[in-house]
Length: 113
Length: 116
Image (cartoon, rainbow over all chains, first blue to last red; front, side, top):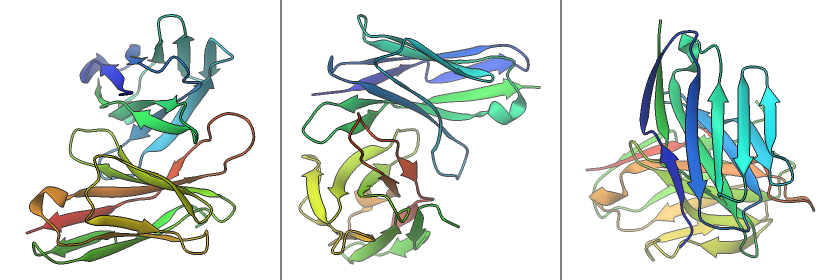
């Protein structure tokens, strides 16, 4: 069946360094790729998303890149801050009749002051 | 607060009891999703609705689980004869399904279920 893989499962970086999280997907028809941030005890919140008609999207310190040929996409966070510490989930749309998304297992990011 | 809301926020029940959770989506959103999340995992799809129609139910979902969205607004998720393995966070999300591509989902705060 369809699935989304995510690596690494945990990531520690020094404050100010960059963090990169990578995801791969199996459905070649996937066309929507959101990223969510979930702080401990809180709801997942959308931080950025990308559609298959573009290869890269940026929003301040956050960027996402998409390689449709290889079926992978990545989240890049630059100049990390302690408040970036959270679990990050990638997701990919599944081209069934009704376009749902499947989530990856998550990456726990720790930014060390 | 105009976001997605869920009630109750926490539910503790004994094995074998039935429980029901409610989700109120963002008012103009026509799609509503239910997910289950366990510690260290991403949200796992359970079912979703477009307006009042239930479009899909996960094949992994037991027959003990049922969901409704009778008027296309709020939704309820019922679990009958709860088991300890049902203990998890149950998340609801809503979106507006337009005409272009998949839609952005906004999550509620979740209902944490503990089955003793």
